[in-house]
Image 1 (cartoon, rainbow over the protein chains, first blue to last red):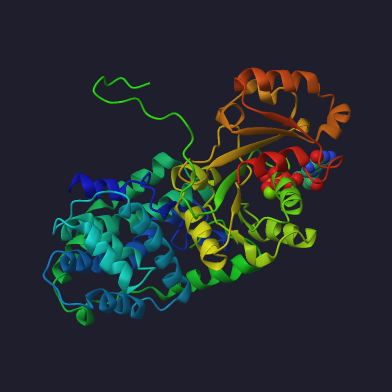
Image 2 (cartoon, each protein chain N blue to C red):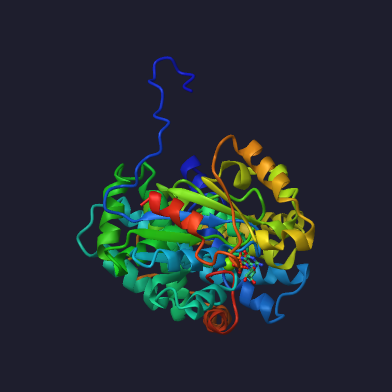
Length: 231
Length: 215
Ligand SMILES: Nc1nc2c(ncn2[C@@H]2O[C@H](COP(=O)(O)OP(=O)(O)OP(=O)(O)O)[C@@H](O)[C@H]2O)c(=O)[nH]1
Ligand SMILES: [Mg+2]
């Protein structure tokens, strides 16, 4: 794993990630997630669905960034990821984070696979001013494997940190849970890497209806009462 | 001071905001010290200025509603930011959500001259990143006890303006304004301090004048 990928995976990276709980806030508010024992299944479910989807598209984006490509690849990836994200609230959250991530990446000078992350990022932003998080991550990560690993890891580490903040869970214990998941995170990243070179339309579409519903409910409740996280 | 003899010393003067963009002023301080009340007062006092507000309050609709009821600002000029339980992170360590809010206001209102960003209520160590704001005001109140300025912390010691609010309450809570003002001036090394009561002076004239000087 490159140091650049580590930088992007660091919770201190100012890419807007800290305001996303990945549905955990809504689950906690509904009493679906109360105690420490509830956390591992939630994280695993997220990794296998939203995490795999993010890793697949981050890897595909990194692959596209490193290959000679025709115009339109970023539009296609954007539309294909939209099509695999049935919840409008989840699409919105992904784009909010993508925009924030693009801002943070844009001010760094990032050596990428094609040595020119800046122009690739500009092409992504030209296709859509609010790109999906996974697509920007793929452009910035510098390698297909790095992009996949970071995406898979962030799908777990974000909600884990939200659990510490919202439920007051023991941060040492929560880190232990994440550490216990590294083999599965690696496996998800490995699967994403295997898909990276495929045509965007062929990419898998893992999803969790439960998480999609949580994302929708999160937005609805935010309008009625208050939600501290964007997702 | 530069420790590298081969490098010219950095310019210590404040950077002027990039030409054409609105001046951004942060309003921070502990919970309930009067940040929203001050923002409302500024909106009223600066009615002739093309301005907008970003709030980081956890009850995002609450602050927006307060400003709407006060009738001081078109609700379309208020953007609320969700901070994921970490109000200080959103104004200091990862400012992207706030920059996003500022950008979307600037897109909607091209002539914008001033954006006021209210932080969520936080502790005395919370300050705004210079990447987010050009100037910052830190609001503490008399009711928090007259020890607050003495305790210092980056908010109290380094903010461009320190406001000690709710002076009307001093006799009720047994706070000594002389001690507060003296301690504040001592820990701030000459940076300005305003003592005010929004009950006595609802338009916050001293702070409004300070803000005007920065436009
Ligand atoms: N007596 C008195 N009350 C004040 C003064 N300024 C504000 N208040 C009151 O103090 C309370 C809190 O004020 P806000 O403006 O909501 O405080 P805030 O800092 O925005 O609070 P948070 O956003 O929750 O951190 C309100 O009830 C205000 O009316 C003042 O100068 N004197
Ligand atoms: Mg307030």
